[in-house]
Image 1 (tube, helix red, strand yellow):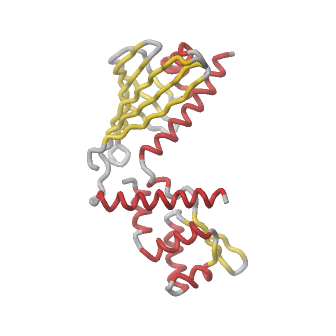
Image 2 (tube, chains in turn green, blue; image 1 turned 180 degrees about the vertical axis):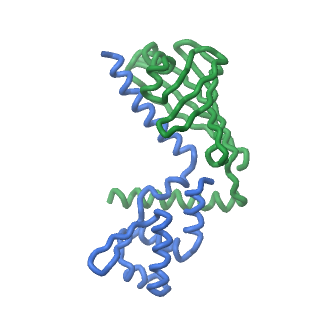
Image 3 (cartoon, chains in turn brown, orange; image 1 turned 30 degrees about the vertical axis):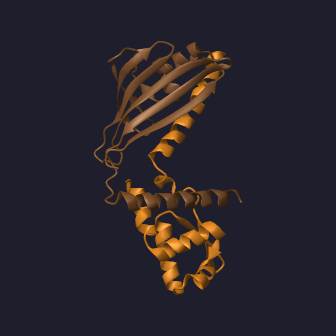
Length: 142
Length: 107
């Protein structure tokens, strides 16, 4: 568990042309409206920051650009507490569809954290908690 | 592990507390008296365990007359369900904002 690489993938089809989506992903003023304040520039190697409303600052660097189609950047959050420290890469891919554009976001993260001594026991716990959480959610609706 | 999940693990590490929490999850809100009847420990002990569960944000106490009704807190286990699910919901929310923005750009 100590060098666990995790991936988060989100896909959504937007009823908008890829060109518009691309602008929303690459123009600082527009990025600020849905993601975070930033000094992004669509140039490979450009280093920039994403600044969250909570005051956190992410260190980023453009890794690849395929205009109108794909974009990836480094997404690091340096923190003294390993529970919050994060090194990851965020990739966006745009695919035109009959109804608009499919946007796929993948965040692959290396999270050094996970300092618990007994990974197996913790895994068991997690399964229990997942079940309990399902119970809680059902209870919430009842 | 975050400080919050550490606290939750420690709190639910005690079998009596875990049983109390599970009962509240399963059966809904209950008084200390009702919980004591099936807990196999004394009422002061049950009250003490409920206090610890409350401090960890796992249960909520509601006073009604001379009785306190306890209920499990939905969502209190969220810190344990993992980074991946947490990040998924964060990105879903960002995509919602992106969708709003795209609509505005249309005008």
